[in-house]
Length: 120
Image (cartoon, rainbow, N blue to C red; front, side):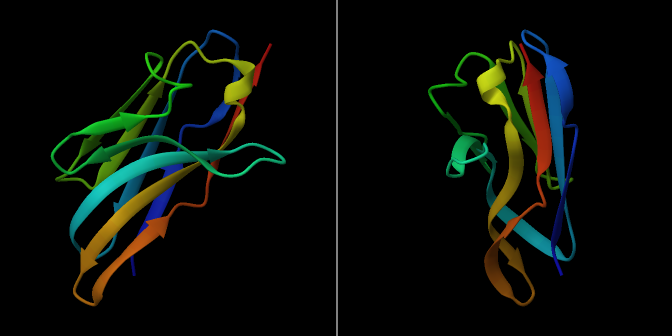
């Protein structure tokens, strides 16, 4: 069974920084892409950033230049460095692992979410 465990959320003032961490555990052969999504109250879940196994990245326009995604393929971990945080970044942030290959097949997985709150 594969699990994604996130950490690093919290409360920060506008202009501050946070670093999110997500680790995938289980009998994993490989993971295609990993990413971060967020969902604010009353809004749909939206993509924040993704990174492929080869290191290609994609960001939402709203976070470009402020957030940086990285991963460690050997450890099945993904990070999100968030700088210059704004109140509108407040949301629950979810880690996603896309196309996780295990002995039983391939599927996507989601973490349980970590709250990020940015005060003005």
